Amino acid sequence: MAILTVNNIKKMFGTDTIIQDITFEVQKGDRIGLVGINGSGKTTLFKVLNGEYSADEGSFTPARDTSIGYMEQHVCRDMEKPAFDEVMTVFAPLLKMEAEIERLTAEIAAVPENIDALIEKQTELNDRFIADGGLTCRNRARSTLIGLGFAPEQIYAPIGVLSGGQKAKIQLAKMLLGESNLLLLDEPTNHLDIPSVEWLEDFLKNYSGSYIVISHDRYFLDAVTNRTFEIENTRLTEYKGNYTRFLHQKEENRVAMQRVYDNTQREIKRIEGIIEQQKRFNQERNYVTIASKQKSIDRLEATLQKPEDEPDTIRFQFKASQRGGNDVLMAEDLALQFGENRLFQNVNLEIKRGEKVFLIGPNGCGKTSLLKILLDIYKETAGEHRFGANIDIGYYDQAQGNLDESKTVIDEIWDLHPYMTQTQVRSALAVFLFKGEDVYKPVKGLSGGERARVLLLKLMLSKANLLILDEPTNHLDIGSCEALENALLGYDGTLFVVSHDRYLINKLADKIYYLDPTGTTLYLGNYDAYLEARQQKEAAAEAAASLEATAKPNAYRQKKERASEIRKKKAALSKCERDIEATELEIEALNEKLLDPEIASDYEQTLDITNQIAACKEQSDALMNEWTALNIWLEENGEA
Image (cartoon, rainbow, N blue to C red; front, side, top):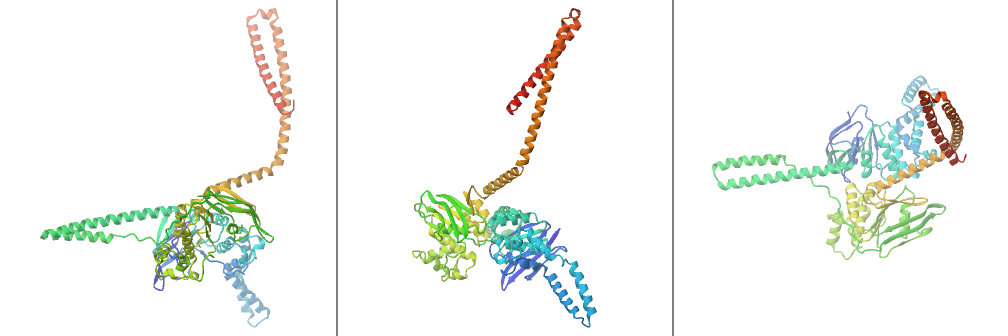
C-alpha cells in the first residue's frame, strides 16, 4: 500500500527548472536511496515534500496515517541550546499549551470577574494537554536520548560540545518522538565517524517505517536501501535494488537505449538511401514508393529517443614524476600530547612503495594530528618518523586551508606552475569542470565541492610519489568520488589516506591502521576484511570474558565432578574385585563337580557343567579387563 504518492512535481527558481515530471510512490517498508550530482535537486524535492517549498506544478498525497519526519543536512544551528531543549522542540504545541495553562492559572488566582469562563477554558485546555501526552513528554524525551546512548550529563550539555554523531542522534530522537513513519534523511552520515555511521545503519535496518535517504556514502546506501531514485537532468528515474545494483541497471539501460537509437538511425539512413535511389529513377511509380518510405522515416523519428548526455564529471589521473625508495614511511612509538591531554601513543607505521594504506578511527582520536606530525606541522611528544629516499609528498587538507583566498581559480593554479601556458592551465581546469568564466571565480567564493576540485587539480599537477590525503571525498558528489577512486586506483605512487568513506577503503586499501589512544593496530586487506577481523576479535574477547566469568564456578563444579567420578571408579573397582572372586569360586565348584564319578559318567551333565565353566571364564576375562581399565584410570588421575 502506498504511504506517499507524488504526481508530476515541478519546481523552479526564477527561470531555472530544478526538477520536473517527478512521479513516484513510496510503499510501506520501502528503503529508498535518492542520488544525483550536487545541485541536481535532491534537497529541493525533500523541501517540497516537507512543505517548506511549494511545487510550481503537480502534487503529492500522503496516506491518511502517514507522518513525515525530516532530518536536514545542516542541523542544530543554535550551538548554545542544550540537547534536551532541542529535542523538546518536537513538542512545541504541547509546550505552548502548557504556557497558556500557566497563564490562565495566574489569571484565575487574581479572582477576576470572568473567573468561571477562565476556569472552563483552563479545564478544557488541561484535558487536551493530558490527552496529547503533555504530562509525559519530558520523560519521553529524556528516555529517548538515554536510549540513543547519551550519558545523563550529556542530555543537558550545549549542542556545540557534542560530536557530529551525537548531533545526528538528536535529530533522530526528534523524529522518533514525532512518531514519524516516513523519514526524509538528507546526508545523515555527514561528519559522522565510522562507529556512528554503523550505529545509524543498525538503526535504519531495524526501523519499522519507510524512509528516503540522500547520501554520497555508497557503502551506507548499499547497506540500508532496497530501491534507488536518481535525479538527473531535472527528472527522476526509479531502479530496484541498492546503489551497486542501480549502477549495473543504469549502465545496462544506457547501453540498451544507445543500441536502439543507433539501430534506428541506421534504419533511417537505409530508407533515406532508398528514397534517393527512387528519386534518381524519376518515374511516377517511384514517387509512390518515396512517399511510403518517407512515412516510415516519420514513424521512426517520432519514436526516436536520443539518450541524454551524462552530466559533466571530472576525469583525471595521478602520475608520479619519479620512483621513490622501497621504504616510503616508517614511524616508531609516536605520541602526541597537548598539555595534560594525551591524544595517542605507541603509533607504529610501516609503508612500502606502491602500497595503498588507510588510517581509520573514531572522531577525535588524532588522525589529522598524526598526519600533521608526518608533515612537520606538529612536533611529536615522543617517538620518531622518517621518509625514504626520493619521496615527494602531496597533501590534501580536509579543512581545505591550503588555498589562497585572495586569488582567482586560474591564478591559484598558474602561480604554482608558471611554466604552463594559459591554454594548458585552462585545459587542466576544464578537466575539473572549471570552464569559461568559471576560471575567474574568486577562491573565497567557491563551494566546498569546487574547492575540493581545485585541491585535486593541484595534487595532480604536483606529480608527487606519496599522496597523504585527509578525508578526500568530503564535499564531493558520487560522480566525483568515483572519478577520484579511478584516479587513485591507477596511481603509480604510494597512498596514505585518512577516510571514513568505507566504499573508497574497500576498493583501494591494501592494509588498514586503526588508531585509538593506545596506538595503532594493523589489519591486512580492505574494509570488509578489517570488519571481519574486528568481529572475530570482538567475538573472541566476549568468549574469553564469558569464560573468565564462569571460570571459578566451573573449577569448583569440575572439582566436585572429578571427586564424584573417582568415588564411582573406586566403587566400581571394589565391585569388580568382588565379582572376580565370586566367579573364580564358582569355577572351582564346577570343576569339583566334574570330579564326581557319577556326574563324569553322565554325558549330558558333563556337557552342561563344561558349558557353565566356559561361560564363567568368559565372564571372568571381561571382569579382569574392566579391573585393568579402572586401575589405569585411577593411576592416571593420581588415585592408584
